[in-house]
Length: 538
Image 1 (cartoon, rainbow, N blue to C red):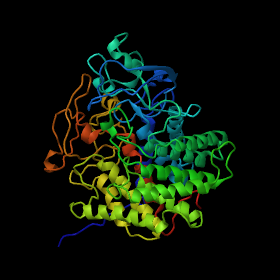
Image 2 (image 1 turned 180 degrees about the vertical axis):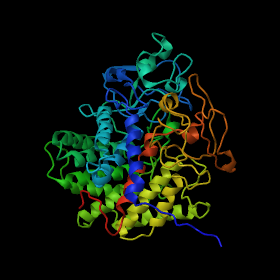
Image 3 (image 1 turned 180 degrees about the horizontal axis):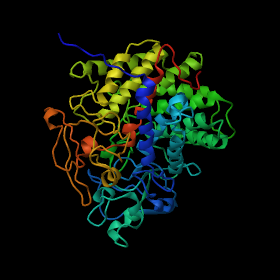
Image 4 (image 1 turned 90 degrees about the vertical axis):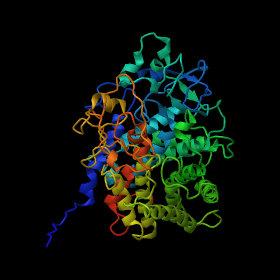
């Protein structure tokens, strides 16, 4: 008779404490500018020239991001320093930073014991503020001007771009000496979205407004001057949202890097966080709008527009659709307001839409041997897994149930190793994780075998429909022996390759990592009985 030994599983606080600490470490290592944090991977600041960067018009680019001729300077310099690198490369985008700050600030606000001042090992307060500081630089509130990108990915035959070279960030300020080909490596361009006072692409207007309104909520007591400046920016940027966009949204150069198409969810989130900010205390002077109901009405309107729009329930929480967070926040806002009449959406409708997205993931999981709620052969698989875990916790919290608890834990387990490849898709979480990320600092300075130093907390793309190829001078070959150890587990539709050349499977990014701290915090506090979440609503 076979003897089966019991498996001991530790409490969530112990299981996820290291994962939260790793997540914070990832963002700290992604810091650009003078306020870098020394570590085993970081020995010097990068891109100090960004502090006096020239601004430029948006050029026309091909599908690879290349442009013809030269850039058109606007004759205005701005401080574009700070912020996080977007991914394994060094450009910085408001598109992804705004989403990241939204989630991190909400984590600090709602989970102070895990992501805020109550944690000795994973307090994200300073890191979330670091991201907010850079968003403030990219939104010139005096002139109402949005700057949305620092650096270029690809250049042309006369201009080197970030993706054309492989190096450490501290080399860029003097890279190439006086060679004109490297001029935009040494002095990185900052791109302006449109002339001052123009309408703002709606997904960034909504996410920026949410970030600034959450900044007010988090820092209102500890730093009221900073918080008030954030709230004013929130209202100004939201007021300029283009609510009838024509053509493609303005995301980054090129659009294909982040081809976002949905925006109603972002306006729902922005309006909801503005309501929450105004409802939390007497508003500071000088705001265009001081009545919280003004923004509650707008939030309900954009929620209804999303629910009846073309993309409803076609995605789950990630960079490209944050309705899974916006609905949860709006449900709580309506509850706080006393369920007032006259709103364009009800709490039940928001709950039903959350359930529709989760049920779609459950149906998808039924087709997968490991029960994953998102197709493996697509982009951003890891981010979707963490986002689904967050949504499951949100729904169960709102319904005081455990309807999706098991699914949420399974989806989180899928990205932490319970998958066909047996690999955790978050570096440092578990024992088998990517060793060969497409990340310049990790590749040049870090190890190639999982031993320290590693870029702990980095969330990689995950399995995809293909493994990319392409090597640059200076790239450390990884894996060193060239063996694809995960190839035996690939399928006809999904592959996972741990190879520095494969950006499609092992490049990390700030937006990919943004939902994992929330997912871990939810697992620690629970959702029904004994819930210890402290927020502005309690």
